[in-house]
Amino acid sequence: MLISIYRVIKFAFQNFWRNIWLSLVTVAILTLTFLTISFLVFFNVVAKQSISVIEEKIDISVYFKHDMPREEITQTQFKLLSLPWTKNIKYISREQALENFKIKHFDNNKLIDILKELDDNPLGATLVITAKDMDGYNNIIDVFGSEELKGKIQNTETDFNNYRRAIDRVSFITAKVKQIGVAASIILALIAILIVFYTIKIAIYTHKDEIAIMKLVGAGNSFVKLPFLIESILYAILACILSVIILYPLIKIVNPHIEFFVGADFNLIEYFRGNILIIMGWQLLGAIALNLISSTAALG
Image 1 (cartoon, one colour):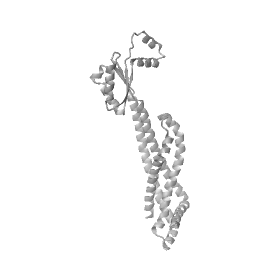
Image 2 (cartoon, one colour; image 1 turned 90 degrees about the horizontal axis):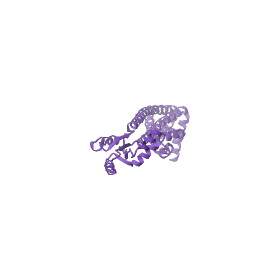
Image 3 (cartoon, one colour; image 1 turned 60 degrees about the vertical axis):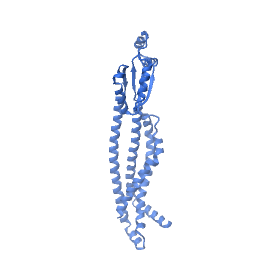
Image 4 (cartoon, helix red, strand yellow; image 1 turned 120 degrees about the vertical axis):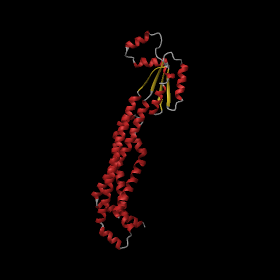
């Protein structure tokens, strides 16, 4: 039994080396397929992280009239917190709002002098509201359009629309890259299937005399076919290993730029290390399955 297994594996490697150039082309195409799919996975992760970072920067600042009692503002705060769209509300007192205003406009002496001449703080308290998701901001803005709240506030301020446009751009680019990447992956996979098919066909033709002798001495079909099937699996394994060898240094190069873009909390290298078995494992299984189907078709 062990001798038979050894011979089958030996024949598989012999087939690989005897058609080395075809084998290398097959491995190269499969490697490109692995790299394309991996690029799609990592691009999708980075895009999601980018959208998450943008969403974290969005808030709505609600400026109340300066004579609005704290109790009424607190009631409004609790009412907003009870809404299903509200994630968090930060209260900024009149005094803190004035200090923030002075810090923001410290270089505007004229404005600071006007504030000093006033007998009372002209600024009201502020509520800074963050929603659970993008759609929640529209709902919260609608709430402040009600007659009940209109009389309490001076105005609302948000960068929601600017950030919304940024998120839409990221989502649009992500969708387009996905479409191109999926199309490229399918094309490369089909090319790989055809190359594996014809590589096995050529290998069978090259070894037709040996196969005939093996059958004459009583070798079964499984013993004859197994080396070619193992050869097709070998293509997938080598392509997977090669793609990891190429991917890792590439990720190390782009990681600092990605950290700058999406924030230091995200590390693509750590993500790669933590998910390499899942990402490459599924790709390897898919490649092996496609290669086996192609090889089986070639073997008839």
